[in-house]
Image (cartoon, rainbow, N blue to C red; front, side, top):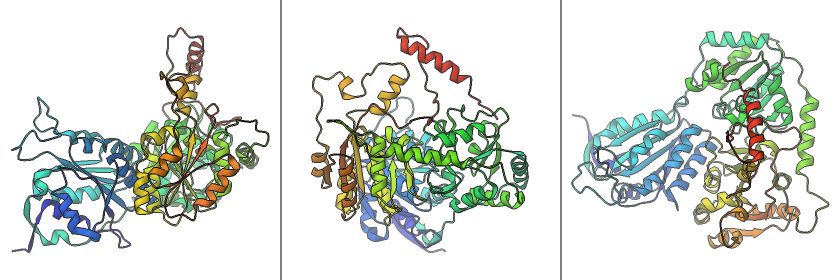
Length: 614
């Protein structure tokens, strides 16, 4: 008879997770973020307390934001490691749903372990339990099904024998990678079972590099050989496949310009001669020029989000063909693309081996340099500012760029700054971290903490607007407690400046976005310096752009977060000159307002440019 170990289900889960390893010998699940309640404190709480440093537990301030931290950690680690998050039942679990959706959209691994109701149903309904009048099996956690790559409900202790391996198989598979939810009934957590001792033997999880079908490689090689003006769209899959150097060499060798998505930005340093910058709605003039002229668009590890494609109006060459290199069939075959299903690094190497000495038409290096010169000028500090002048976001970005070095990582998620940073930030390789699949307000501060945990050797600069800061800021206190240093640049434009500009750009009137346009009796005067300082962060207000540069430099010597507040002008967005491209945002077909009717006419014209299939 095989040897067994008698453990509670919670103890067994933690023991098993603690011995799952990467190829370099580290825990694949680094540890767990936890806020305890009656759905997990007795079962998982006891197991985690007993595990100690073998599987560390970290306390967060909010279930959503501690999950954001775990997600940013996984992104910073290029999906080679992940973290878990646990909550009680009911509102604690529901708070994690936004984060689960964020991880799902961005294809990032995180293990959600929400407590659930009693499997035995004896005390039903328990505190915080929702009750469906027509389905007795439903609980709050069923909402995770649509935002999980794998979902399981643990209603028996022995379910762990299959559920846990399936969970990590999902998280380590580049094609299915994303969030996993193991809904853990609270009575089952505490129930004992005789587990096979062999179940707890250490295991190494390898990240596969799927090889593409040779026939797909041949088809794409033929398309590249016949193309005169191809362009590569670099997505996050380049970074997760650790194919940055391969992509740079491929682009240089075959003379193919590279344009960037939000997730793929900094796969190539901005200084790389084939990097033409951001594409699409928030794109550079140089990138959008080569994208519009391209007769072959080669996506590498990208979802082809609407911001990248200009809502499928950007790639306007009537002869253009679309290729998608991706580990996921869903992405590889979008919009009738010629698919290459496989690892980005392997696929590029195999394509390169068959292209010989081929080279596409010469790229317009002058256009690229002209764009970079325009960025430098746009981000430069103004010298003739009137009294009461508030700087633009571009000036803030320029100040941070000048005050930081090659090791800086700019990170953000929502509002004006994602578009501005994609357009204007000039990173070294790996110097950019943007959550823009879900563009989730409130990700920024928790994400900065997770990113710094993943990349402690690099300077992390968190750009956040006052709107996002107000949504979720409490993990500053966690970063202070754990002495996790990063710098927050808080741009205060007194409302939701990005959406205010979009609202008016679509013909609407300023309404309900900036505080001054809201239905309130008193305009708020929020002291963000005092607020951040009250949580233990070092907080200060920058008087102007020059002062911001000084304060950025001073922050490097601290072992706690620094928050630098600066007032900014909400009226002007990041685009200038020929930068940027159309974005499909629906305009009212009927309106009493002249500007809305004009915007609708423009909308109809732009719709004619959309090309939805290859």
